[in-house]
Structures are given as structure tokens and as C-alpha cells.
Image 1 (cartoon, rainbow, N blue to C red):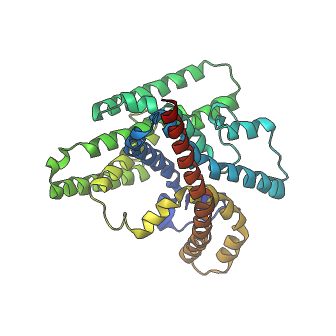
Image 2: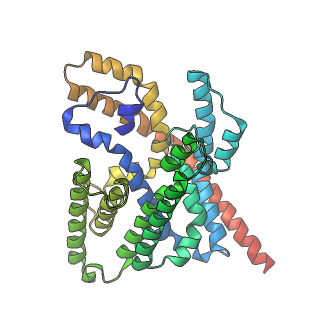
Image 3: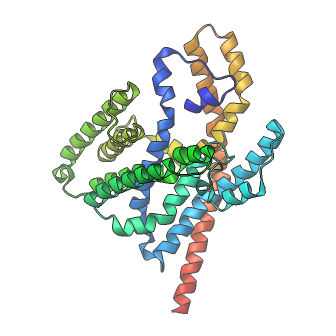
Length: 349
């Protein structure tokens, strides 16, 4: 909804009942980072049987992310030439192919629309094995979260006294991976709390009760954020999103409500990477259709819902195709490479 409103040209008008939620749609990135850290912790033990778990982790992550991202680099380059007569520098291509563009001020957004998060993710992946080895409990995770906050505050302080161009400073403040590391730390907190055998006294009914409470607390926090009621105790109201979504994620893990966890949402989760990288371009190309719908519909709500339904109807099938023919083969290739490396290591020993 967030991108449908702001990527479409002209921007779409919103009915009042959905305005605050749609404008807060960018917070979905926060949820993405929290879930990412949680899932990395949850699946890292699967690498334990590898001859080198760290190498196995990097192989798995590269082949999970790179094939679709590389395909989107090619498609985005063609899109930009076709629609905008825009050409990108060789360094822009190199930095994206090497996944180092988050370190390059001014290039941190990249030209794959919404792909800036992949630059942030790759930085987190690069240091995750070290984090996994050292951050092994809820207490460690909380300490890590505040360490990341203090580090980011220190970086902001340094930027105040730097002599770099203002546009570089602005780029770093908005897109630097260090800004998002405290959010990843929330995912680690959620994981360690979820794995505690004594959580909710260990009884299924009690765990569900705690989970229900956490979901409602998270929803309440999110509502207060929508209305601007939270105090700015972290130096950036953005970090309250981590608290809200962390609470909802932990609650859902402990008490998976059917409205949140079902066959439809599980399918959407499976194709969500493709949805994320494809939807912005689809939305932009649909701009004339949106304008026509808004021009002919008698109701703003009907116009908005029609555009939303149309967007899903196009993006989801395209994402399934992308998942089936790009993501799945990439994942399979990564597994074959990992097995081959393990076999070679066994022979050498």
C-alpha cells in the first residue's frame, strides 16, 4: 500500500480510514529485518553438519539472495533506459553486483527499486557468524541492541563534525546499515526469548496466553506510533517500530493466530522476496490504469481498493513465477555447491 500510494504517478489519494496505516507502510522494512535476524538464528544450527558452518552459511545466503537480485539489476537497467533514458555508471553496477553499495554514500539506494534493503542485509550477513558466536542469550541480545544504538549515536556525532558533502551525510543517515543494526538485534532478542524452555512456564496453554498478550501489546504499541504518542527515548522514533514488531513476532511464534498464520500468508511469505523486488516497477507501470480507475469510480474507497486488488492480482502471480524459476533454482544450486565443498573437505581429510 505504501509504495502503491507514493510510487504511482501521480500519487494516489487515500480514503481517511486507511491513511495512517498506508503512510506507515515503510515500517514493513523494520519487520523484515527483525524476521531476518530471527530466521538466521533459527536456521543456523542446520549448518552444524557442514565441514565449515561459516562457509556453508555464506554459500546458502549468497545463492538465496543473489540470483533474483542479479536478475533485477538487469531488468532495472533495461527499465531505466526504456522509461527514463537513464544510464548507470560502471561503478554502480560493480558495487551492486558485489553487494557493497551500502558502503558507498550516494549509491546506497542502488537502482533496483526498494533494493537498498539488500545492501543492508548483506552487511548484516557478513558479520552474522560473529554475532551468532557471541550473542547467545536474551541478556546478550539486549546488550547487543544497546551497543548498536550507542555505536549509531557515535557515528551520528562524527558526521556532525565531518567535512564530507552534505548529500553524502544525508545518504549515510538514511541508508547506512549501522542505523538498522539495533533492529536486527531485536530479532535476536525474540529468538532467544522464544527458545527459552521456561517461557510461559513451558505449558502450551500458558505459552499461548503469553503469546496473545504480546500480540496485543505489539498492536497497541503500533497504534500509539501511528498517532505519535510515543516518547523519543531512542533518539529516533523509528526504533519503537522494532519494539512493536518484535512483540508481535514473539507473540505470533508462541500463539500463531489463524488470521496471521495460514495457507495464504504462508504462500505470500514464500514468494515475499520476489514480491518485494517486483512490486514497485509493476506499480509504476500501472500508474495510467490507477489514474483511469480513480477518474471513473464514484468512491475514493472503491478506487483505492480496486487499485490494491489489481496490484495484488498482477504482482503475486509474477512473484510466483519468479520464485519458481529464479529463486528455487538458485537455492538448489547453493545446496549442490555446499554439498560439493563438504565432499571435497572429507576427501582431503
